[in-house]
Image (cartoon, rainbow, N blue to C red; front, side, top):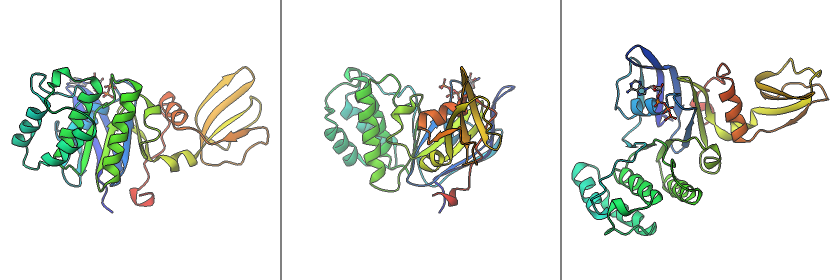
Length: 281
Ligand SMILES: Nc1ncnc2c1ncn2[C@@H]1O[C@H](COP(=O)(O)OP(=O)(O)OP(=O)(O)O)[C@@H](O)[C@H]1O
């Protein structure tokens, strides 16, 4: 099956500084993919290249179908009412499902008469997402849709995105700094660090494919592919890839998503190479 998004050998630079290097990843159709990474990792740059807002120096991005983008600052006209915002959207776009947009806003309890400037942060995010969805995209790209939202609003926005994905062929790529927000919603993970993807794959398979080990410092885990390790007193804790044969003094368990992400972010040199999409789609 053709992936919804395929990035191959992408490299982007701003003047002399390379921001993305050797960036290859793919996201299968119908997935909600989380793009995580520290500040300055290149997430926004990758999204801008994906939606055609910038031209890469090398490599290519292939999107199967139409793409819609919600930028980090969710640009909307504060003086427009929500209804006027929808009218503007209809005039600006060839593909436009105004009825679905109005239904979505009604379900979310967002009044069409309200001025955009008078909406809460959560409602503003929902209007921005609704406008993007009204364009009937195949791939929806959201740059930090949850930034500055309270926990309840974050939950509501994620749940409403889930509802859209459940309905059909839509694929979502969204960036966030708060991994715990992504746990219930996202089923694909891309970890970007220092301009390169460290991890790209199905979240359940990634969690199944790693172990958290704890044991006494003198026990050997030499056969394991260590992603990152830390020592507390005489105990050593580490996150490893695969299921290595272990010294019986090690205790092993499956990691949580946050542990997995943190272990990779702590060790930018570690990388689980992207697997072919066909193997896990
Ligand atoms: N227009 C630009 N001109 C020059 N450098 C830029 C430009 N845009 C981004 N950069 C630099 O590129 C790097 C990656 O930025 P980018 O915004 O893609 O990262 P990010 O992962 O989205 O970060 P954050 O989590 O802080 O939003 C940063 O070092 C940033 O300073």
